[in-house]
Length: 209
Image (cartoon, rainbow, N blue to C red):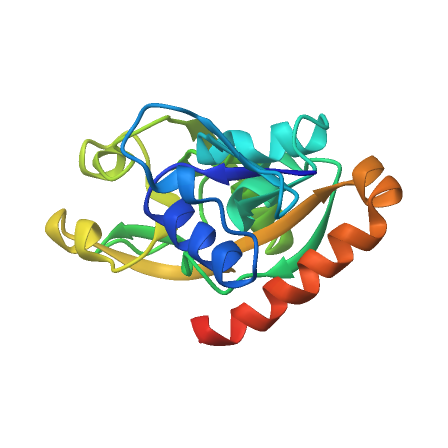
């Protein structure tokens, strides 16, 4: 039995559809109930729904053998897991955004508001920019409007929220998508099953182009 941590929400539903198409169906997962764990012994798989940002923790700690997590989570928290596959789902980008008239002249410390301090820190270190990171947990877009920060580093999908708040993307930090990850110990002891699952999932990825 392979334990699979699925991210709750729209992305998780798309990911499950990939597993189903790959031959790892579990009909009970589609029933309208509040259960969090579903299994199909015939297919050798057990699924459970968790908060997207927690998937990598379940996998790293071995509660799940495999799971699907956004590249943003993997870069920010650097869990000790193997990344086996880019599922080509949930595509967006990590970007720097600011008020439209903002120009970084580099003459003072740049104030950066973000939910992703490690990603932001590494990005600005790579370009040699001195920054003051302000860690926020939500409503990042209002930070530059209220003067809390000069810029934000956040995930951008359509850019609609930025436009509605008179902000614009100034630079792309890194593209983001959902990744298929595995617990290192599980990979050692369930190598054949996990490699088979990875190959079957790889066949499904081409449909996400």
